[in-house]
Length: 457
Ligand code: BES
Ligand code: MN
Ligand code: MN
Image (cartoon, rainbow, N blue to C red; front, side):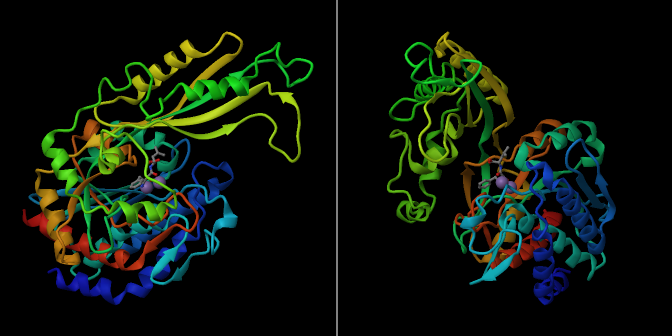
């Protein structure tokens, strides 16, 4: 039963690669409106590939921003479980273009890696499951489980349309488990099942002083400088050791059990190799927690961008009228993004001097999640990885965020299997993003095995 789809996927490696390259050529950057026709094109491309795979009810569903793509195949029989597969066809902006060794939307294979924006996050990984389904339907004419796909185009901008769609389409999306490939393994031969994802609270902070830029000689010393104030506010958000100073921030952080600390302590993460890949001179962080704990199980606050004042060539002496900062906080269970945004607003309002006006806008957010590891679908994922990689997957927490996982749980009652095929050095969101091609093919095999094992449990 499983031999034919495996052989089919094997036979079609080159074709699958050509197709993935086609999808990666579409610059479906969700946050940049001048790419709106590209997100439409990517949605249509994904839908076409689902039709070609043999899926039913393929629909491109319009939203206020970028379309969703739905498809299903529900003929496995009444007793067979249903798997809801999620992925996102949108990608992060590719800037700065100059740092790419080959253009981000002209995919190139070098040394067994496929280089392109979205190769690993998430086009390559979502395509894995479409191809696994195709391999079954084009050989056996059936799948051992029912499947539903829900693919979005707004993940990298917060996922508002899907968040709105889920609670209004509970029947359409009803399933027994969700399956998501949008995370990374430990190394090429060491698969990992992620059981924890951090949440996110992204805020924009504006500081405004005078109604126009002022000459810093005529006014300096008499009018407060919003850029100085911004720096001062930022410096009061964390202490020297990185502890976040917002009152109440840690109140709902669920402490790690000794058992989980032991488990995380056993993860095969080599700190030296990990550091080397970043290019930074040293590892940093909370001395009370190990690196693995800091990355997956502790919250953060980071500044991402500051706009303000004069940054052109030469010198210019102004007190800027208004300046802006972008910040985010990564959250862990049981922190709530809305509550954290309110705490952030209250604290900034309290520390800001009366010489400026401060505005805080919560841009987007997502809840953290811990998924249940004690369920048949996890056992199926373990055996699928073992069958393909000849290695038992480890269980780990991931520092990144996939907000939909919490929404599946909250509105559909679904646990999610986070079955990633990326690698830690895929450089997602950065120049020279890549996907290890062997993992693309192994991913398809793992998915084929997963459907078979899950149907038997
Ligand atoms: N696939 C990532 C999440 C991720 C990051 C998994 C790193 C494994 C390792 C996802 O596409 C992503 O980038 N999420 C955003 C969420 C956001 C924009 C709401 C993130 O984590 O910044
Ligand atoms: Mn992703
Ligand atoms: Mn991403």
